[in-house]
Length: 137
Image (cartoon, rainbow, N blue to C red; front, side, top):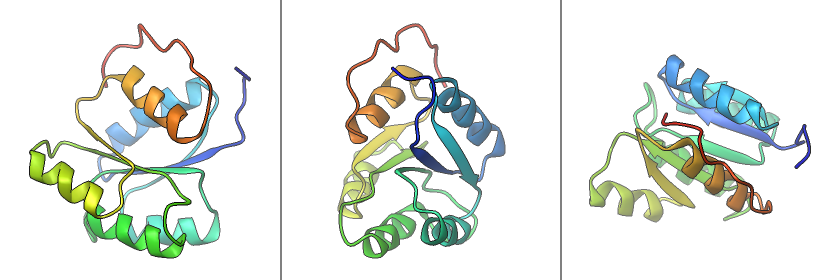
C-alpha cells in the first residue's frame, strides 16, 4: 500500500469530534480528507471539488443525510460516487431507507475502524489490507 493515496474523501457529520476521529483514522492510512458539518455545504463542496467517496451522517442541521445522498446521486448521474452512510440510526427501516436513497453501504455508530476501512477500500476498488487492531470508533 502506498503511503499517500490520491483519493479525497468527503466526511459529512455535524459532530465535529466524530468527524475529527474519522479524519485522523483515514489520514493515518493515506487518504486526503475534507469535512463538512452540513448537507448544503457538502453538496456545494462536491460540486466544486468532486470527492472519490462520501461518508455521510443522517442527522445534519439543514438537510438530512437521505436527501444529501439523493442529491449526490442526481449530481453524479447515478452510481459514480460511492456513499457510505455512517450513523447512529440503527433500525432496519433506517438502513433500508438509506439504500433506497442511494447509499452503497450503511454502517452504524459505534463502528469498528477496520470495518469502515474495509468498506472504504472495497468501494474504491482497493486490494485487501490487514486493518486489524485499530480499536472502535
